[in-house]
Length: 223
Image (cartoon, rainbow, N blue to C red; front, side, top):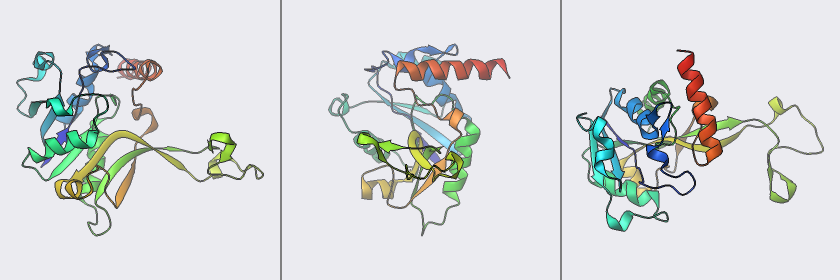
């Protein structure tokens, strides 16, 4: 069985009150939590938070949910997420963990299930973890106009360029022993799991919020 980690801060710098702000008629965190509850192999969801537990009252009776009050030493915007993950996995009896964020409300239970199936059926000699990424094909540059994945003097079609992948923070899968060895959620031999672009919006800014809200509204209207 798998424990899902859904860390959540009470406050957000760039999008105030983000986790509890309504989007599509529900607080942001509801979207991911409902997807996790729908996945049979996830038998526990840990929310490590410094927020008031009353904010989660609609889910308190779900036997999959465990709310852990964040330790004072782990509070603050500059604390590494890896330290929070470590605190959670050391408190839990399961060996396999899925870590995700409230800020990915469009990721479907189907996509998460696909990632879990790939991870659980992997060749353990070749792969030790899994992370999600979004695929892009275009002309990418570093600052100072240094080309990354193309030769500016050779104008290839964008579909013929090498793909570039963005780690999108939608989900990570790893085992306790690998995390404790590497101290990071992406191990030494990870699987890159491509998520659908329209499911991969990560809300960091008000512009991201606007886009996610549009996509959720469109999704609701086309059910």
